Length: 349
Image (cartoon, rainbow, N blue to C red; front, side):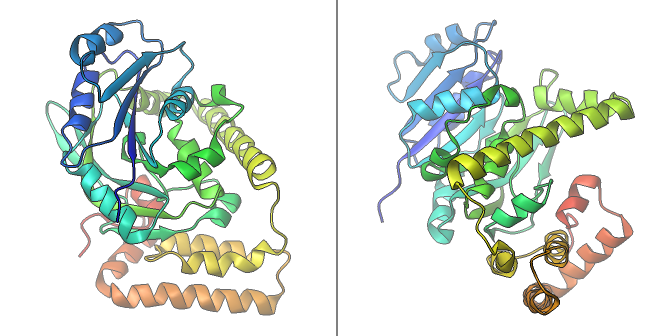
């Protein structure tokens, strides 16, 4: 089987101190990327000069600077410059471990997925911690209806640097007319949008990406600032995020899918059955979606509920002790908020 052509898009804004390490982590893969593209989003530090000094004579590394437009605009400009069948994304302050591409390509071949994300390791000068969504490699199947009916998409993606997507999926998302909506947190467009356009998703449980924790980490700083904000500010932020997702959903449905299939409520169970290892949180969401579907009669609802619960209980029986611990922890609130949304307990045996 021929190796698919791979592209890595590294997005940079004022990370002159880190971007060289990021590029080297991509160059040092056990299986080589076919192309490496660094998109500088109008940095006002020495980023461009640093890139020129280190990579001007390296034909494998392309880099260019554009007018500052934010994260999603950088994704888009990098996508236009790329030609890979599978596109990997990396923030300029993060790092790939050297077997990331090799293991990712094996997972693409094994599961025939369109969208892959993996566990990552947060690291700083003082500490490091592994962040997992699931305790094992898993095929997450399809999530079109889940994305349509739910505001959260925990467990369907993670931070930018853990995400890779087939070109055929990105071609359904770009060009997106509201790039300015996603100056930051643009990985949400990749995660949510990919689900909407029908990407089959998988997850690698090995922490193959390292996220650098530092004083200038923009995403973490936004999270900290939001935590310090008052309740009113948090509500405004949450509502604005909801509006942006609704706009994205409207764009995909009207411009890319062109329609919402009639009778799609009958497909809830089929989509759920595509999930290899359904968590309690996801199972509960599908049960709620079926019960609230106005187009389904009670007979149809009961038929779908039987199929959903049968599939979930089959998974539970196969992982009885582990899932029992997850269920108890979820119900009793012993997990932290992020883990609770995913329906798992880290380290459960």
